[in-house]
Length: 73
Image (cartoon, rainbow, N blue to C red; front, side):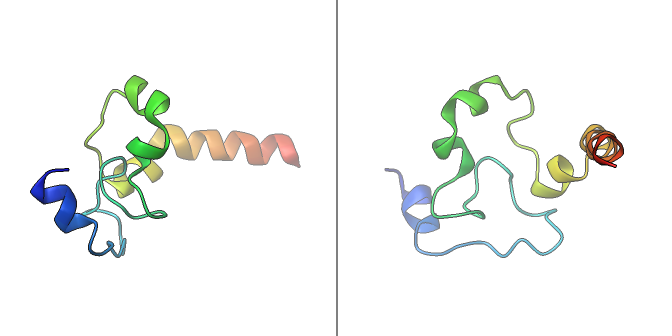
């Protein structure tokens, strides 16, 4: 484990608006980064350094949720 990982394991991040937290690399959901919890999924992701805000509020994801909502009604 390198110095950065050791330091980051001492605490956690507060997400707030999600613009300062990296979706895959920072510990913001649980006790491990998502890249560690889901390595196979992380390997196929194209934009590995995107923030939480960028991933969760992408136009594609919003479209997907709208489509799922539409189907459920």
